Length: 262
Image (tube, rainbow, N blue to C red; front, top):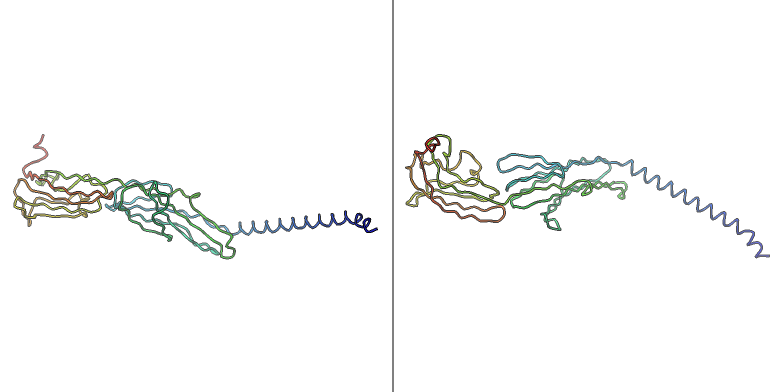
């Protein structure tokens, strides 16, 4: 008798179990739908990181993410996350600095706006990462990183410096000042002019090597020196670590003009 009752109730029990499974499935769908709707309701505005590069002459260039810049050290670079605070979210901004070919960043900065000076040669890769996390539900996270922003690439040239052996301070506006030229990525510089007796007549530093009317004008204590041979000593260091120790004669050609050479 008991076996007959169990056989009679089996279809009923199966039906009840089926209904319970369906109910759980429907409830699960409602929960999932609520989570999706809730997540979509908490949308943040996408940030727009940029960089501004300033070279040693004070000239600037603005870069969007993914842009590449080539220049000479030293370079000052300002990075701006342009990530607005969003109501109901916490905000974390980070910048990873790497040199091309390396696996791990040599520096990570956690600020919305970052200033960094590059005084080495090479290719620098800077990756921004911006994360919004819901204050109500930490599972709701909006992350903007490598998948959204290509990194900034800044290429710094190897160092170079040329030291001439003559100049003509005659007031014709051509080669009136003695200075170095073809300067690239020089981060330390000092130079001095001496006469044949070893007396220092003039000296200048790195702040004058990028100036058109800087350097020695062929005078000493405000008075023109005689035409002839003088001596220059240059010490410098490049962003690539190269040191320069240059000593050479300097011919002061006071009577020389551009037209006289034609």
